[in-house]
Amino acid sequence: KVKLLYIENINNPDRLLHHASSLIKKGCKIAAIKAGNTNAGSRAACSHTGAMTSSDAAVEALFRKAGIVRCHGREELVTVANVFMCKELRSRRLAIITHAGGPGVMLTDALENGGLKIPKIKDSPAKMALKEKLHPGSSVENPIDFLATGTAGQLGAIIDACENDFEVDGMAVIYGSSGLFPVRDVYKLLDEKMHACSKPIYPILPSVIDVKDDVSYFLSHGNVNFPDEVLLGKALTKVMNTPKPSEERIFLEGVDISEIRRIIDDAADGFQQPEVIHRLFDAAGIPRVEEIVVDKEKDAVEAARQIGFPLVMKVVGPVHKTEVGGVVLNIRNKESVRKEFRHLMSIGQAEAVLLAQMAWGTELFIGAKYEPKFGHVILCGLGGIYVEVMKDFTSGLAPLTMEEAYSMIKNLKSFKILKGYRGKSGVDIKRFGEVIVRLSSLLRFAIEIKELDINPLLGNGGNIFAVDARIRIEKG
Image (cartoon, rainbow, N blue to C red; front, side, top):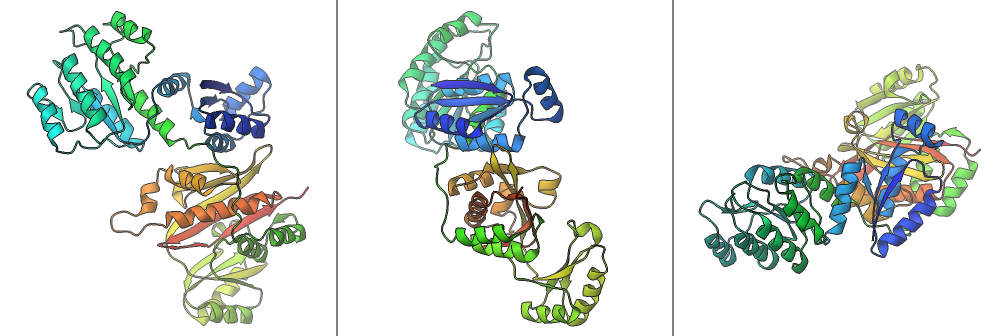
């Protein structure tokens, strides 16, 4: 039921996706290391096996689509495998049971940093009854600390309360040797509870040298051990944050496949003009700001009248507009339109000027690249420095389902910003996910699109608009 893989090259991504998804849907659990995800690593992999390393973003997307837990080292792989061997954690609330304060705090940090919850135990008769069974000074708040002098009987009472009375979905039990008392009776009880309880119990027995015979006894009964609480916390959150295998369906609501194909068939190779991008987005139902492209000054004035002030003007022609001073914001009158039109048309390689409605909101990013063998890899994240400097983005493999898109968004480090913070309005997560899915459907029927960027995509409350985009088509 558990498979661990070490991979240097993926020659047939579709076959891996099909077989891994099928096995996981039948109850198998798979974790894998994909080596060679840096330039130097790729050279090492090639020199070792003659393998050509696939794009790391494509691998990440493929693993997430298949439901494979990706690991980056042997220790992490083994820890994830041990998590697989425990009963499945059905939701994200965990009780931490410990007789040592420090490890409990470190485990709490590792779990909550990864998105799991360590909820406070609510006041109740069961909580009061448990506290009466523990030594004075013990805490039943979560982490539940029953002190270094805690007994096997007290541990049993805590586990029973977590299993039957407290609102948690699983337990992590930290119990090493204090050197004051034998621990065999504690490990015997822990073994019994792990088999009897319906909720998973993750045993953290750190004293693998001081009481190695007792730890060996515990392991001989078919149990696993997590000697390091932080490694467990990171592995468990990685397992919980890996989505289930995706369904094989394509979102087609409001997607005009015939129009998409007509546009692609008529388009020339290379980066596309705004008019082509507009038509493709309209055919896929991707919302965009109103834009008009002109090459005459009088037409620019008329376009400004149609769109309304304030507006933005951009040069058409150079790929990197901002680097050549080709973007002018917040234009508020006809005189400024005339002045900026002349300025933009004087830029080298300028072909025309684009006028667009001025939009405000949180800057978002969606990008896509066609990877041989894999297909289109789609990236999403916050725009600006978050994607360019902090590399905060997630990847998915087209076509995407709504569930996959939401998972991509929720796994961003900046997800809390997207939800809104400190009085600032957030982004409509459902709408953002829909735009990602619509883009993936567009790409499914336009494999000639080799690169695509929407940066920025502006989100303001329930409104999301593509503001600037570039698309490169290659048919050869």
